[in-house]
Length: 100
Image (cartoon, rainbow, N blue to C red; front, side, top):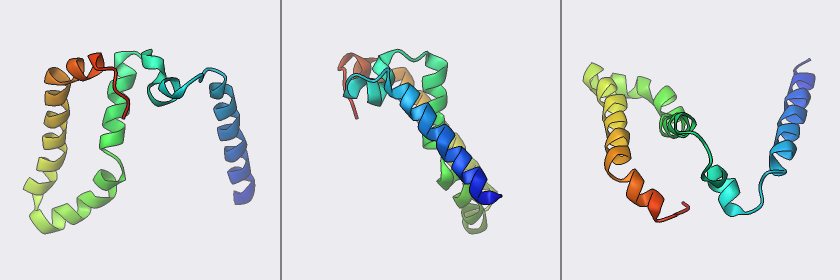
């Protein structure tokens, strides 16, 4: 049963990849979706990338070591950093047409 679920998941993932590959013509299309994504999707992607498994799995260790102040500092500090960079650096970096 579990093997079939993995196989079905794999088939769906490969199918989505093959479908999406039709719209990729160069590295810019692949890396930044041709700079055509709406702002809410870009924002959600950046936050999901920033707050990955470290935040979910490592937060319990931070709580044990530093208490509640350590748990609160991590997401709020990171969020403020992302907002700061977005407000002051995103536009100049976007105009430079960089790929990272």
